[in-house]
Figure (cartoon, one colour):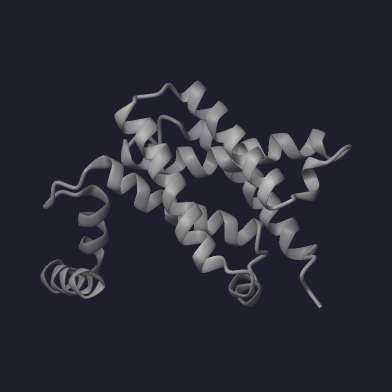
Length: 178
């Protein structure tokens, strides 16, 4: 399967050039790529960047040591399919999508990753941070696929600023440094 995808990628790059390759893939002008597949691809990409910056503190060796590639392949893909299904098949409203993304983020961070921000008294700061970061992960690919980023810029900028602040602080206060 991967050889087939490499062959397609090579031919697209050869025929259209690098800059058009990504435009073709993301916009799907020459191919009828369903929105849900574009969403899942972008979701995995955004989730990886956000998670690598906050959860793994930009530390590639630590990411590999805790099974990041396997975790990423499972968690990122399945949650991307789930949210893509809710957005493009069920046409769920953004309010409910925000609530589901927040509950998903809290469950994942508290139950599986034992995040120290979700215990008392840090919980009062942790819940809004988790809501902002997981909303960024869910909504950014949605707005890109729907081509409504400019319309939602006032919603996306605070989420992005919160993530950047948290990623920078996670880098400087890295608990995994020796």
